[in-house]
Picture 1 (cartoon, rainbow, N blue to C red):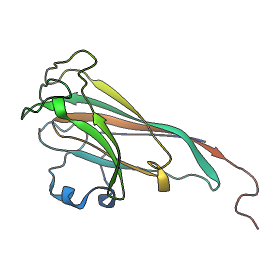
Picture 2 (picture 1 turned 180 degrees about the vertical axis):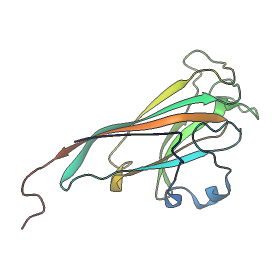
Picture 3 (picture 1 turned 90 degrees about the vertical axis):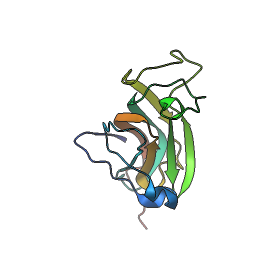
Length: 162
């Protein structure tokens, strides 16, 4: 069984607040294609599987552009997208994170509006537990779209029967 779902405009991001730290409720949030700096995108994918399906593999792919220019993942300058990151949370606990813009892969310096860029994140069973994935992107970066691709192995007969 394969599940593919894409979130982009006109979809309005709807995140599960229980997955993110409580202190984040005060963060300024934006939706897909947001153009204002210093705002986070938080979103939750939710899907259904048949009974007796086991997660095999999956990816989250984020398509994005910097709202402000930057200098790669070691930047500490204000107003610089270079220190922006992606993150995956479940029940208030961070499952994974990483920088969006790398200093190990050119270009080390980038302009506002450059790209778009693509980040592919391999998912684990823990990240997609309960048929839900909550992720976010920080904060000087416009998320154009996000897509999940999930593969499950399903038993068709006899599962759950006495």
